[in-house]
Length: 82
Image (cartoon, rainbow, N blue to C red; front, side, top):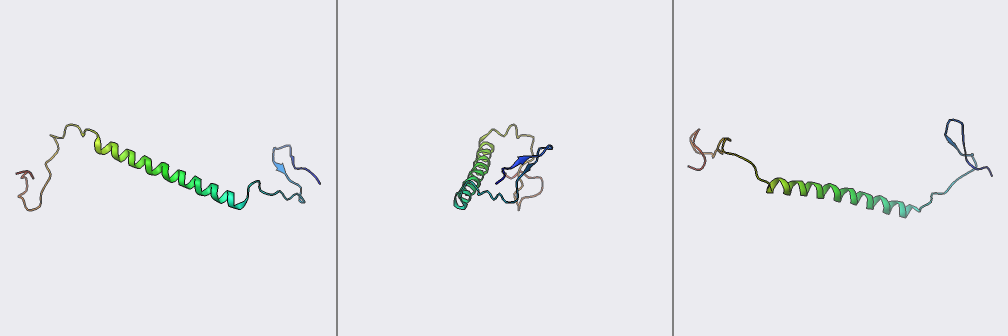
């Protein structure tokens, strides 16, 4: 039985008769993929929730120069609070 070797370019060459088994079982690989996906999902969700909470609780700044909210049924140009 021949062992794999590296050619002068740096590519790993495996003999045709060598059939290596994967180091982990199919069940372990599926479990690892599921855990990785859950971790990625939790990371995205916590980032979005954290950014949303930050945006909702920070000081909006000086809003006096912004136009007043328009309420349907009021004449144009009338502030919503009146």
